[in-house]
Image (cartoon, rainbow, N blue to C red; front, side, top):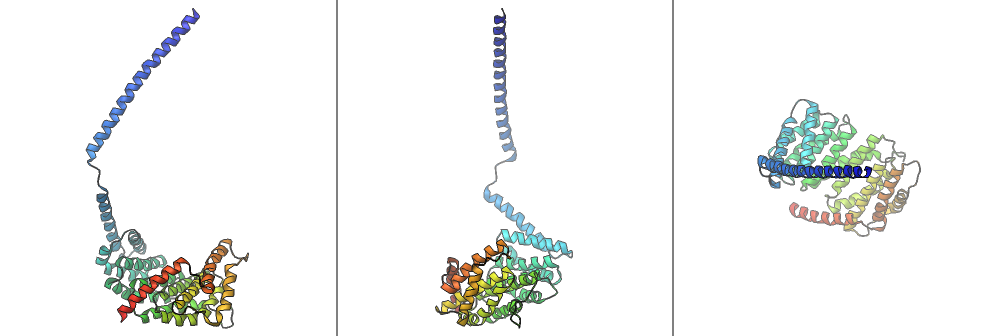
Length: 359
């Protein structure tokens, strides 16, 4: 009897589980049908899915509206509001190419930049200088960017030389001036040389003192000198080869003094500038060796390329060695890396176009 009762219980339990499974399957099927119906109904309610081109067009319209609002907002009296609007314009111009929109609002943007450079605080002034570059990149070479540069160059130069401004702002102005001159392209050699002299007046303060010792500047000061020297070297690429050759003879010895600076960034920029001078000078004279200074210069470069002084940070030593190995090869062994070769070819083509225009 007990065995029979067990069989009965097992049999009843199996029947119960079978019935439940059938009911669950029915419910699942109903759920699937219901879900499909809901999805179909949702698609019918929302209409057809928009095409990618339509979505992109809508996004661009929103972006343009945002840009116009930011340009209008950059004229407000509130300093924080102006800075926020300038940064918003930067953000849009960094993401989208909108030359037509920028050209129609160019005069407003130019006035905003001039006003922020004259009366703004540190962050606003830096944002204005950066915006000047982004705006000219959008406009490209031509009458619009030429006109904008003509208006902004005096303001940026004044800010660069204004000792009451922060070193950060002045460094940003130096970078902006060099980039603007590079974008404009068709500029008189006298104007370029004048800008280079302005930059040199700043970084020359890091040359040796009268007694032959290295000046001791704060990091903020050497950061400004690094920016000024980088701007100076950038303009080397648009100066005639004859002018660069004469500059190489005069500047290599003085620039080598900056290799002993306590600031790693200034040392590296100085080394790269020396390498650039040698590279361009050798376009005219393959045997250019920099006069009697080559042996001393090579010795300094080798020391920096193998520097293992423990008083320097590990990251600083690694960055310095990597940079100066390439610099040493360029100066001493005339082994240009691929990037240097490409830049030389591009620069030669650019100079040919400039010579045709100027003649």
